[in-house]
Length: 283
Image (cartoon, rainbow, N blue to C red; front, side, top):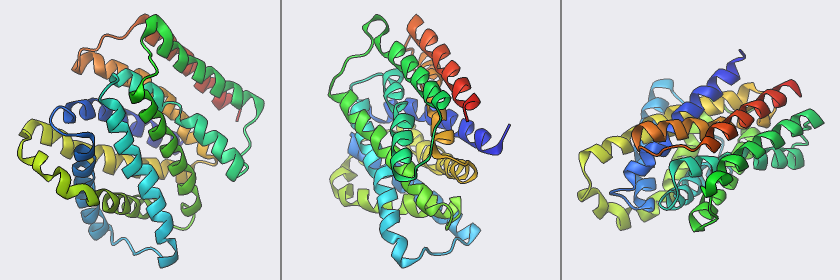
């Protein structure tokens, strides 16, 4: 198995865990508060990474690009996701995020002219059908405001994937992730005075979840994701693995939050895996 696939799969497993931890964090924190504290932890982690790895500073002319990455991949993404996660299940939220590869493939086709042949597009279509099956089976899916917020987060993350391709040839995965995290946190720090009182009323169990999200889900996972993007020939080869997320998240939700998955989850999951196989064959 190619290295970028290994990095992608590990990242998806970690991010599936993040859906569960977000639900736990939202018990005591507001969506904004959870976003701010999660990325403060992530930034502290990357300060240590930058010190140990002696990460060089970026060129001044590229700083606006890093702010664009920080906004789309972190501050906007996590805030809109947290707002949406308040009113939808972890299974449904992961399903909506699974639309990211479609947004990414379309954007990559327009911006970078990354061509996907008919078999590849057929694979994406099959995967999306699998997502729809999970959504509509037994009326699980309902188009509410929470779903719309998560759709915004999916679109935001697809833009992050595309923007990162612009810098990935000039900077290492550690550099792009480190400075994207820093800029995303800077944007969120504007709201720190507003959410600081939430920290006093929280409990240590929830704060452990926030620390795990900051270090593992936002730190290590994004490093692996950047590494995968740097090794893959096309953006869609990496973002396509996001289609696995709904199935993994549903299984985790069952064992941790006792959310019982429907038969449609398994049927849709099987269709999604079929689509991934078709996509891989079509490259």
